[in-house]
Image (cartoon, rainbow, N blue to C red; front, side):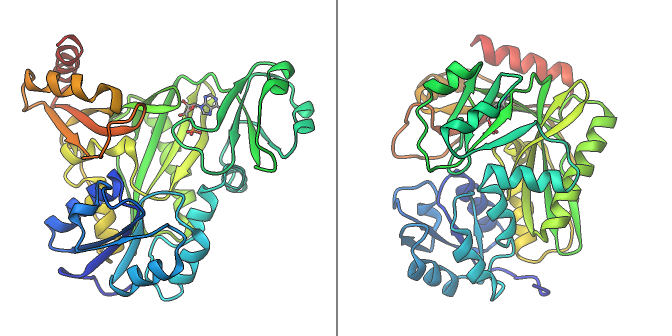
Length: 368
Ligand code: AMP
């Protein structure tokens, strides 16, 4: 795409979850129109759509319809059908392309790709059948289903062969056994790939609980040296994918450096704090990049701590919010039909100009 698509061009989004919703809010503010494809007409993004297409993500006719009524098409999650998207990409409608999607949908392919770029990963081996566990030594390992795993789903930690024997895996599904990493921190690097350059947000520092992202601090408190390494690896990945849009790469920080964990070719949960904490949010940059804007380099204007809200916590968080100073606490609720246990239904961003001030807001939040 050489020409910038100007409003009121139509942006089609495959997937109507919270990432689609926040992309849509940014796009609508800039004057774009939104079309959405999702099987659930009550999904968070549906109410923002000019045209809502109720269909499965692999429904070819529905995807064609979305492409016809949109000037550009984006996906907001990894499990969009990469083969079909490849088809659409032939006529240039999906700037993110299919390659990043194909790789990120499969944990083994993703790790092989990172290794091919000489980016260090946890040791891993593929598990296609129960006997493959016999090749594992140096326990513990994390066993992950290669496809359709997110938020800790399809993941198991095994401490010995006996644990492996107890696992009830669903072969012929493919699995990967990753060495358990005793990391010091987890970080993510979120970049925006434009037609003429790649911009970076400063890294995010993430805490997961039960495999689900719980909080992200921005900027991460890591050394300049680690930051440089994280940018360098992420640049290597983004450049080799011929990718346009926002993408995220997650790393483990260990005493020996950083290890690649996974990548996501889309805006990322860890970077929601950019809405309040940066001159441009990750959603602004994604929309800018896929509509053909020249490179934009965001600046950090506020320190942030983003806290995910899970379904079971929504009511208590809403209560807490009412007694906090709203200048430092920003509430986002995605409008999901049900507040299901362990499903992300919103997030809170705590902001402050200085570390000590942010620490005070965090303390206030934890005691109310
Ligand atoms: P993933 O879906 O692969 O990002 O895994 C979710 C979370 O599980 C990660 O963010 C880590 O907190 C934890 N985890 C995943 N893989 C490993 C590993 N190899 N070693 C230690 N913890 C892990």
